[in-house]
Image (cartoon, rainbow, N blue to C red):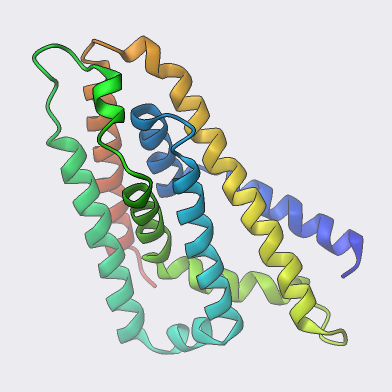
Length: 208
């Protein structure tokens, strides 16, 4: 792969990663509740889901979903249902009688649970599958071996994606001491829950 081609792809991925979305909201929520070190599991969950979608796109599943409206619709509603579940869960959180003790909240999260949440959020959006299917051909030289090129594209995406998950988590974690023993964290949860519900509604209502 030519360096100029990779550089163009890198800037495209960077712009996509900067744009806030469901994973950014989840990363901030994990960062503010559990601390940035535990968010390594969140980053790994996000990257794992992205790599699976990349592999599926490379195998032609993206083209299959584009041609099969029924399959796309099922995936779309599954993704919306999970975002709805996360949103309701956050909206129903209640502040402790002793205030929101951050250390107490941190103890509730496990790397396995955080990985699972990030993975399900990432894997449940079929738009990403179609996105990879549309993005990759723009940067692949069909006259050269494709597997090494796909490996470079996938590795670049994984590094950028993981980095921005940690950046969002770290930014949120900086706010954590200010929210300790107050009801501000409760309102952060409610706001995040509202965002997830809004994203679920957008995913369901927008056309394929």
